[in-house]
Length: 387
Image (spheres, helix red, strand yellow):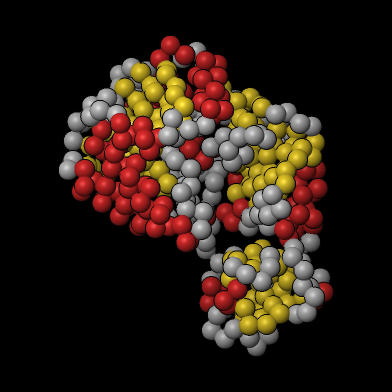
């Protein structure tokens, strides 16, 4: 099967990353390629001498040009290969106890972390949301739909093709769907919401914040649909303020708070969180959560993103009550853990407060990280004690 694939050849001494099983090939490493390659075509990646390195899919001539799916020359990369990856991913989630009576929303496929670069799939009870940024995997989407219907009891399937910026319901079409997370009930806005409708990667971190919330006044900045707010209210927070710039997100937050019976303890406001954090008075909040959207979607945006992260963290540190807590996150893939820690250090220094790290946080266990692809560790977080 592989012999029928066209080939790309790397420049001399550019094969190390592929030998280390990193699943991305960039244009600067490519020396030559077979004629007639089209976007999405399966390819064999070879070193400059023609030796086999991996099998992947061609993405185009610039930037990230190829995503790799197999490093074994003896494996046949066909539909059965990818269906087995689906089964392997399902087996991991079953081993994690997902789904369960208390949690029916979780990530089934996590791209590079499941050996399927550029492909994610989140499940919300009987609704699935698939997102793809790998044109080479488009031919296996029908197989994935069959798998979801047969092995995950899915009745509604939404597909977001990131490369072509088009999306549609492949099966069914439930605009919003309800699901459980640690016994709490949420609505996921599948077709009009952020990401796949809910930030499933924060499930464990939301539980932790809930444990810290008892008797405290809480600010959930960049609240989106109020995930942290609902957990804080279940944790018996004295009061929770949810702030987001999106009116639709704030409306969804209010619905989620109300559906869990906590409407009396929550205020929600449509506002720019950068402005809101600058205006609040010191001591207004005992606990502040910062969970902004990705500030850096490309490497070129990192300097500006770093300034944005410092701005919100500095103002939160200045504002939080003495002896209070700050839970702060970055989901920007291009802002790595070391840089995020440096940003937090700079914010703490400029705030003039004593700040201790009490927890280092990451994405949920159903969002596995490939040891060969550190970029798949995209969610960084810290729990901070501020004096």
